[in-house]
Image 1 (spheres, rainbow, N blue to C red):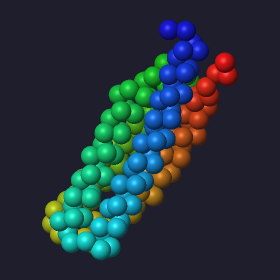
Image 2: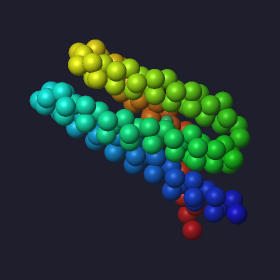
Image 3: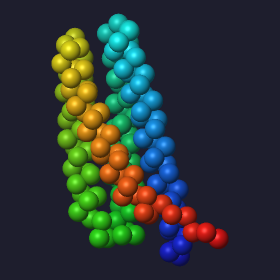
Amino acid sequence: MKQSGLSRRLAIEARRISSQHRQLDELYGLLLGALEHEPLAAVRRGFERFRDALEAHFAMEDDVHFPAFHGLRPELESRLTALIEEHKVMRKALDDVRTCLKSGDLETGAKFLDALVVRLARHEEIEEQLIGGLGKLPQD
Ligand SMILES: [Fe+2]
Ligand SMILES: [Fe+2]
């Protein structure tokens, strides 16, 4: 594959990552709404939707996007590794929230969730800055 073709593919993948971040924001917004106004069963459903989407997003980044970015820019290795490590930390946080919701401890679950989304927002910002440089479509 020619370099410009690879860059174009990466630009498309970079936009896909950003668009998934916005979808995750929406799912989190729905979950927050459930936390404020809905019974526990609806909160659990909202959380599972958010969790499934976030897990799928992490898996795509770990297995597809980051290896491709690394192929193009090997010097990014340490930063990509740090992002992959942070996925592990956030998967653990998702498990903690889930455990709380299963036991009906909404208050602690909401606190864990809060900390998780603050971390996630910072993580997404770093990713978008990192991939933004890769995401320049050639002007042709
Ligand atoms: Fe990520
Ligand atoms: Fe991401």
